[in-house]
Length: 238
Image 1: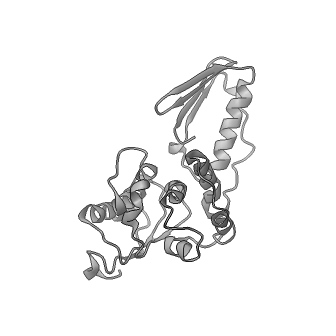
Image 2: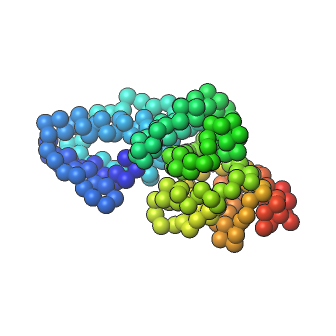
C-alpha cells in the first residue's frame, strides 16, 4: 500500500494500480468491488496517515466509489498495531503478539516509546534486528507517540538494517542520523521529548537532530532533550 501511488479506472471493467516502480493493469467485472476494497483496507490499516501520504484514486464516473460511512476511529497508540501487522506481512516476518498486546492495552494513554523498556521486558530482542524493521516502519507514520527514549542501546549495531524502512526516498545515511532524519521527513511527527543518553552521536547525527529541533520549534517545540554522556554531554539534560 505504501508503494501505491494511484488507483486509476477510466472504464467500468478497468483497474490500473500505479506503484512507485511498476504498474499492474487488468480488467474484471469486479472492478468496483476491488477498488473500494483497496480504499477501505488502506483506511483501516494506516489510520493516522496524512492525506498527502495516501494514494490518489481516479475513477470515471466517481459514483462508482462507495462513500466511506465514517472515518474509522483510530485505535490505541495511533493505530500502531494495524500498521505493524501490515509491515510484518510486507517483510515476511512473524508478528510479535506480546508487542501487539502491549500497544493495544498499555498505550491508550502512554505516549512514550521506550525501546529499552521493551528490551528489558523481553518483548523485543536486540539479537534480532530484523524484528525492528516493521516497528520502525510503523513509527515512521505514527502520530501518537510524543516521547522517544533510546538509552545506551548500541543502536549503531542494528540501525543499518532499518535505513530502508526509515527512508522512502534517499535521505539517510546510518545510525542515529537515520532516526532523526526519519523524524524530520515525517511532517506529522509528534515527538516533543527525546531521551538518548549514553549513546555515541557523530557530527552527522547531531546535524540531523538539529534539523529536527528546528522543525519542531516551528510547531510545538521539543520540551525535553537529554543527550547526557554523548559527544555533546557537556550540555547535560535540557
